[in-house]
Length: 308
Image (spheres, one colour):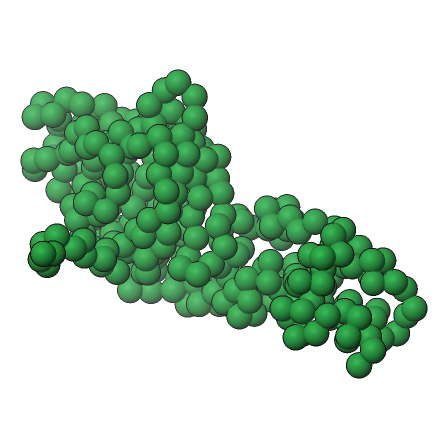
C-alpha cells in the first residue's frame, strides 16, 4: 500500500537557494561555506547531459547560472507559454529573479561534462548597492531576465569567485566580499530595472508591439520564425514571448494563427481563389493542415465557410 512518503510531492512555487538544489538533477561538486561567503551563496554542479522538462521554483535572491564546462541547448518557458531556446557554452550565463516558477530543460553536447556554477546574491547586499547607486527603495528595483548572455566583466568576476571556491577554507574573506560587492555593483549598473518600468515592460512597449504585429501580418504566407521576430524588435526570444502574451493575451504563434485564419476568411468571401491557393497565401502548404487549423478556429471547414 502506498503511503504519503511513497508519493512524490509536487515542487513548491518558491524555495530557498539551498532548497532549489533538491529540484534540479545532477551532482553538487562544491559549495561555498564559511564566513567568506556571507554575501553570496555559490555552488558548482555537474548536470545530466539530458534533462527533460521540470518546474523550477522561484527564489527571492538574484540568481546567476554560469557555464563552467561543456555546452548545451537550454529551453525555458513560463507556465503555459512557448519554449525559448538558448545555445550556451563556457562563459555564458543566465540571470533571473523570477517571482514565479518556470519550466526548464536542456540537452548537452560535445565531449566535455556540462557543469554550471549557481551564484545567489544576498538580498541585503543587493539592497545596499541599489540604495548607494540608484538612491531608490530596494522594493522598486529588480534585475532583468537574461538567457544565454555573454558579459566579459561578469565572467571575470565569476571566474575569480570560482577560483576562491576551489580554495575551500583558504578562501580570503576580504577578497570574496570585495568580489561580491563588485558583482552587485555591476548587476545594478547594467541589469537593474525599476519595478515600475518592469510593469510597463510587461505590457510590451507600444512601438515594439506595433512593429511585431505588422511583421507578423506582412508574413502570413511565410513560416513563423519566433527567434527572428524577437531579434527584429530587439529582444530575446524568451523575453519577447512572455511580454507579447501579457500584452495581447495570446502567444506569438497563436496570434499568427488567428491572423492567418482571419485573412483566409476574408479571401474565402471576397475572392474566387481555390482553397489550396488561399491556404498557401496564409502559410499552409498542406491543404489538410490548413483545413484542420481553420476548422479548429472557426468550427467550419474552409469550403463550408465559403458556402455559408
